[in-house]
Image 1 (cartoon, rainbow, N blue to C red):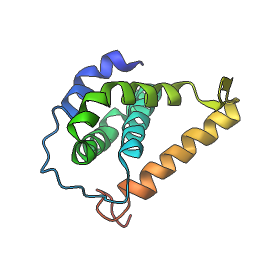
Image 2 (cartoon, rainbow, N blue to C red):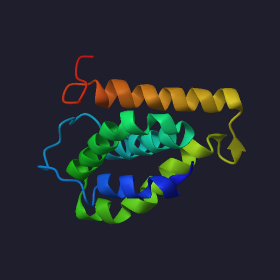
Image 3 (tube, rainbow, N blue to C red):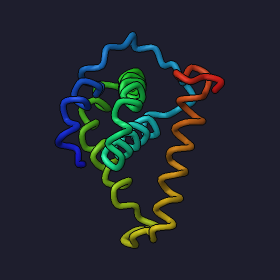
Image 4 (cartoon, helix red, strand yellow):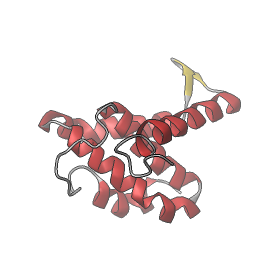
Amino acid sequence: MRLIPLFPLILCATPLFAQTEMVDPVPGFDLQSSILCLAFTVHEIESIPDYAESRADWLIFFSRLIMAKSSPEDNAAFPARFADALESLRNPMFDVNEPATPEEADEILTGTGKMCWFQALAAEGGPYEGQ
């Protein structure tokens, strides 16, 4: 499953359309990490379509987090930054111009998922705080 079937869901959740109070709920988590986590969530749904329902909250949370952290310039750059992050997860690189082995790719994805969970989703201010 690629991005095209998910486009309506992502469109509803992206910073352009996210409804937020512009309060950063996770101040210690930066904008680029938030974009990477949104891309990670999309990649998970692409890889395992059964995750779509359970990851909808993640899409909304990271979209709102991105909106809270973004300046107008960041909003303008969002499509390119998101595309780059998604591509880096679809085709992980171990080093510049050196594709990751399957084991390295798994480590990259696992590490990204853990970062998203522990530093944002389960962190203070995240939707799963303390879990």
